[in-house]
Image (cartoon, rainbow, N blue to C red; front, side, top):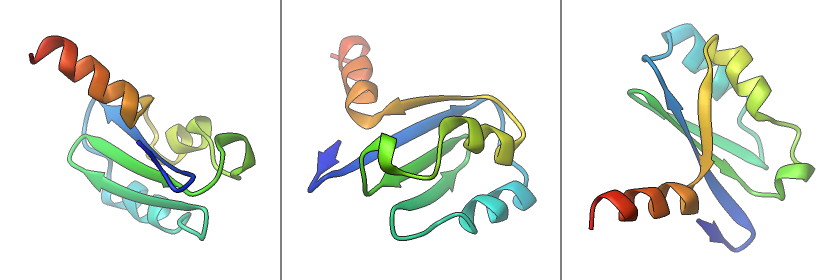
Length: 85
């Protein structure tokens, strides 16, 4: 969801990331990017346009050492609404 120029991305993972990976991701937080890992999901709050941030989905995968399906929260809500009417 976009709010005041911020966008929330959700990364869907096949398994829980290691504590080491979660700590490395937490170390990447800054004034433009913030991260929360919850079980097999990663929530990335981007406070800039995607093209203006120094972070990317590829970097996220490298840090977590696994693939992730990354979606804007609006897309995730539309998918959920389609299947959970």
